[in-house]
Image (tube, rainbow, N blue to C red; front, side, top):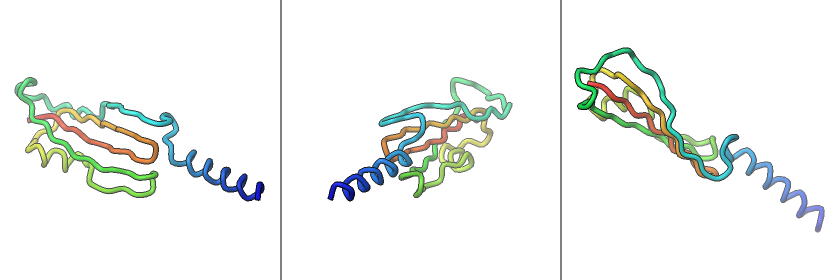
Length: 103
């Protein structure tokens, strides 16, 4: 019985170690700058903003469209100037958001 319990605990530990992102044990929230296209906006204070996102569960299942083109379309941005990537991670769940800014 003890041997069976030990095997189960080892298996659970291995699965948990694979599910947790390498740099965040329980929770992580970060914004990482993406690409700057070199397109100069007409007015930096009146730039449009578009967002797209997708979620990932255990790094195995991914749902949604987090692409730059989808974000630009959602915000009616025709000329992308800047791109940011925002990530929020919980133990087995990750939400990735792409944010574009431009005219």
